[in-house]
Image (cartoon, rainbow, N blue to C red):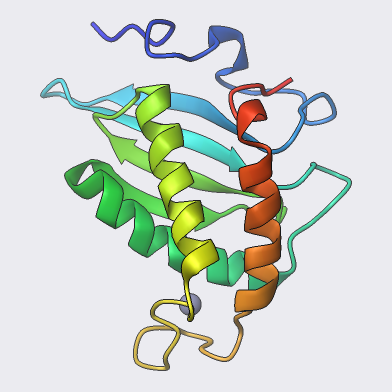
Length: 159
Ligand SMILES: [Zn+2]
């Protein structure tokens, strides 16, 4: 059996939460599903901006999506399933298989963010790889990511 509390998660923060009470940025487990063969799929809420207060521009959202797609694939390998932007423009859904250790996830997230600060282009931002190749911004993504990194000590605190 998996022990989510031991893996660093606050069980009261899993599932539906009151979006008026959260404090972005944070990393939260949304939920998990066990497959027939004992594998677990986990969904996570990577919250970048404060819900109902501040929204990411769609270019920022899009470029962050590209960076995290490449970065999480690199750092999670076979544990990585997908990353996708939230329609509310305040965060992302991260899906992993058989990985639920908070420290492992937050440290991988940190590496992806640090890689963005050092990057000189948005990955896969060509018409071959992307459906709107002109809709990207490296500069604004870096500005946001620097704020997220400066807030690392709060990533484990949802409320
Ligand atoms: Zn794209």
